[in-house]
Image (cartoon, rainbow, N blue to C red; front, side, top):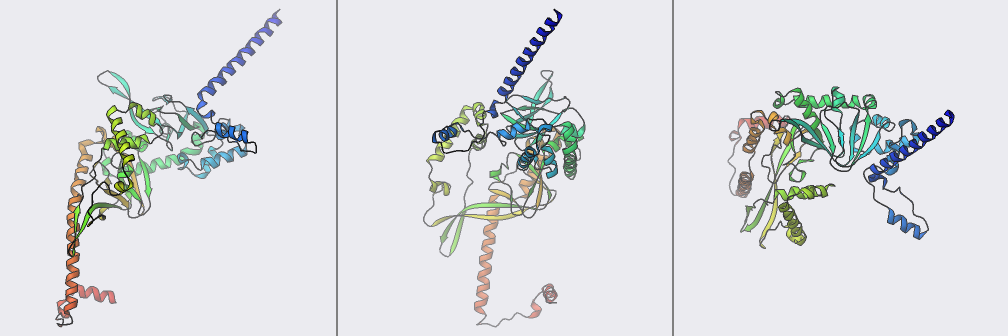
Length: 479
């Protein structure tokens, strides 16, 4: 009797395990339906009906990885074959989030890195929890928030302090400082992550990241503006800041790069040229060219920012929270763009007479050398920053830099005012350009008159009339 009872209990336990495994499998499929719905690539054959069915069912790739690569990364590290690891290694060489690591580290990650998909609103990390893994964003967006004490409601509230976009990593701070999580990370959209556990992080990535972290701290301490900062502020700055390298003649910042809204630039090495563009009307009057400076095309800044944001992948979310007036302005702006012809767009909406021509004059205003800072919100109308040589700049988000803790004594506003006073505006540059142009015309005319008079009158200039310094320099050049 007892043997039969044990057999029945064993069958019941087996049925429960089968049921639990089936439910677990169904939940896993539902959670990963975002990328499982992508069909693997199938080759077309000679059967026309089959080819039509394949093309009809075929969907675009979601994210940077194929469904087969995601399936390999969901396997245990011990179950991955050498061919699968080689396939993942080739993929990792193309990922922006792993570009900072050497090739040897990427090869080792092919045997231990794992893939994870999370739908919007899922919490990845919780502030104060113990760390277990470091994450790389493949696709989607992560919202970073921290707990702040609210003196009104007498409780801690989550305050957003940044975002993580594809190509960035998060979660490494707790490992480098051996402390609990310093922030909460939540998915804002459908997000695909690549993550590495603590043991593999310490073995493969920690050495490279620690060296880069020390270099970032050294770069921050090179500026006297940060001497009064605490270790916590420097650590947070290292998280938010980044170092970019620019080739000679490469554009560093301008109106089309989001220069006026996102980052402050600190020059670590090299020289940056301030390039001013003047849009003028040129008209010929007699033997002289007359110039008139055209006003700046003032557009709705909010509409421009909205147009940039709507190009992102999460445009549906942004449109749902956008104010009604801004939606109407954006729709009107798009309609105007459709109605405008190519000719009106090329001329910038200006009416030119047959005698007038539109010209763009580019002026070298000055340079930002090592230790300089720009991008604090100063007026850069029709102005661009270009690298003169190989340049390294440290970029710090402006919204964080202007917070009260980092803006002691309104130091950044004072630097901004100094830059606006030291760098001439468009009107002053245009007047200086006309002065230099008139001087060039006058100099050419005087030289021409002297050459024409030389045949009729003898040149009375003697060697003693030449300044002594000019003669010394000339003799030195001959030697």
